[in-house]
Amino acid sequence: MNTMEDKISRHRLKVYFEDTDAGGVVYYANYLRYMERGRSEWLSELGFEQRRLSEEQQVGFIVRHVEISYKAPARLDDQLVVCTSPLSLGRAGLVLLQEVQFHESGATAVSAKIEMACISTQTMRPTRIPPALLEKLRACPPEAEVVS
Image (cartoon, rainbow, N blue to C red; front, side, top):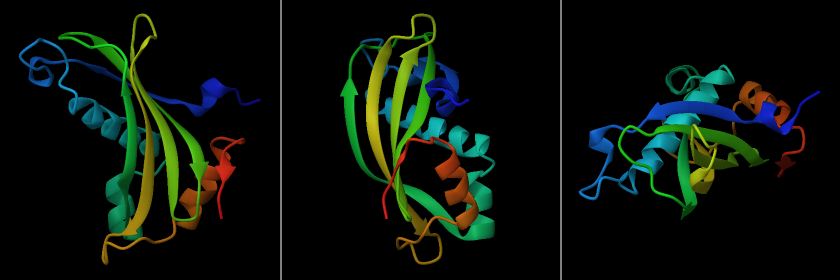
């Protein structure tokens, strides 16, 4: 039986000096980099590395829209976890919930709703998600809203 925990990809990372600003906290834009890594790891866990998708299927994913909320600052040497879970799925795109959490406490530092579009890497125009990946994404979260 699938639980909510089964549907969440977790990518652990550490905050380095280069990630912080003059105040010693993670620079706000770096959370988007962390989330990008989380999405890449999530696709890899599903068996679809981005390079292979580009080379073999001639598709890639781009961020179309982001709604982000900063809740608590992360600092140098903090251990973080990027959690990625699908919210909805369409034929040419998907919406993900991503949270950057503190590893020790599980408290959320940042949460975001990320709208992704599938594009042709040849034309850079929207295209359908490849059937094998679409099938895997549909099986990932049984209660995901599928949009036609």
